[in-house]
Image 1: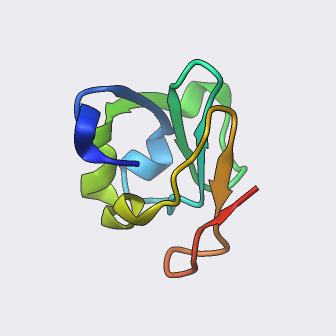
Image 2 (image 1 turned 90 degrees about the horizontal axis):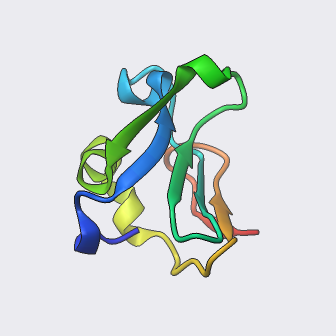
Image 3 (image 1 turned 135 degrees about the vertical axis):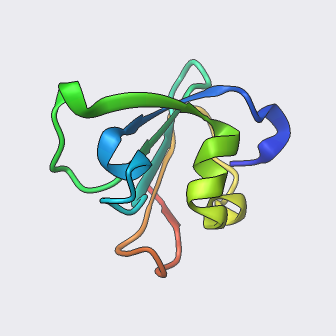
Length: 86
């Protein structure tokens, strides 16, 4: 995830925005939209939108994500673990 389109919307969760959950999953959907998620413990009501710039401020390691193709997902076991493309 690069800061090239810093204002592009990113789907995330309230828990991530409030610092209650770590970013563990990044998905680039088929339309080129980003999803930045943590644990599976959230509901549809928890979904929020932020910018790429805000996501990078929350977790600067997103700059080091492998390049994702449309439809690909990168995951990691914990905040300090390496990213793996699925």
